[in-house]
Length: 443
Image 1 (cartoon, rainbow, N blue to C red):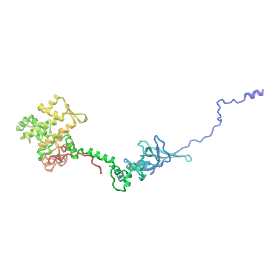
Image 2: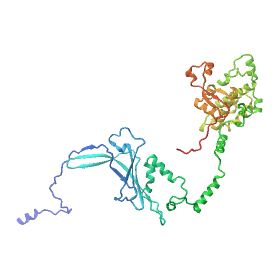
Image 3: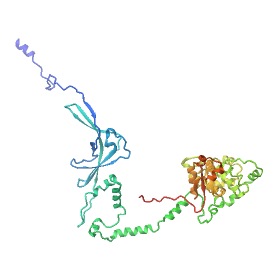
Image 4: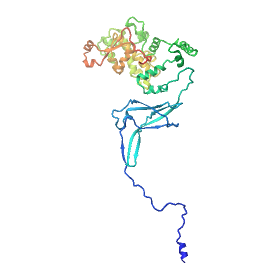
């Protein structure tokens, strides 16, 4: 019976095969970690990402720094990271040059050091940089040639991080570098060497290519001819021959300009109401001069023609339909309206170029009416332009723009503050056209 009881109390063997003890192992309790952010020093830790290649750990890097363009006045705890840009460069590898640049990232990166004995975690901001490797240009040295110096592959670093003086010196070594090779110059010991056949052929082809190249004066003439301004007689010896009625309006068009109703109103001393401030202020003074009256009537046509057009894309203006335009133009003969459309419009639009051409024609006509000295204010108000823009249009026809004189201020009965806002355009010989910049070499 005893044997039966002992057999029943035997422990069963574990079927999972684990030998895990039944007692629990005592572990260390959670402890508080004290975190502190350290101020950035002159040199901060660098986190380097080698990209898609393996970077040898034995490669030494040379650091280069330069001030950041948008550096804050108070860098705070970032230190030199916020004020200086870092570049790492290495040419220690026999075939590759390594360059590490900072990433343009909006995120900040930190490095932390934890001391388990004290429970302190010190954190400091680090630079995140990415390394690029480039194959160094290799050339078999000629016999007798001296080996290149270690500073040659660093010219790119000097151009990026060097001073202005060093950058200028490096740029001058590569500019117009057609000549004997470096080894030939070394063998010549400072004496001049003749060009080889290849260099001579290149120089000869350059001479043939540049033989038919336009001169600076020819380029200026081409630029002037392509500008939106009336044709000027540059051979004129008197200012009245620079812009004539024939070149601005045309003899045939002048015959169709109606001014009889204006003449009758002037004789009857009746007020003439027009949509132009410039024309209204000069009708009475030009009453005895039929030619000036016709110029003013044509100027009124151009101003109305430009103002009834609505702004469109690209600086262009959209003209209204034919019936609406005929109503807006009043009693102007249709032959005049069609002539203006042919000259200053393309289809149903006034392009920006022809809009500028129309305004420069108005400037030249104003010079004829005002005896080549124009107070720009009235015309500026009609065209709804700023003083700066109106002055530029007058400069495009060769006029000089200046302030209102004291005598003119008194005649117009203006306060000094109001007179200071006005400008006077004078057309006189020699004409002073704006010059075109042809890429002058920077000093």
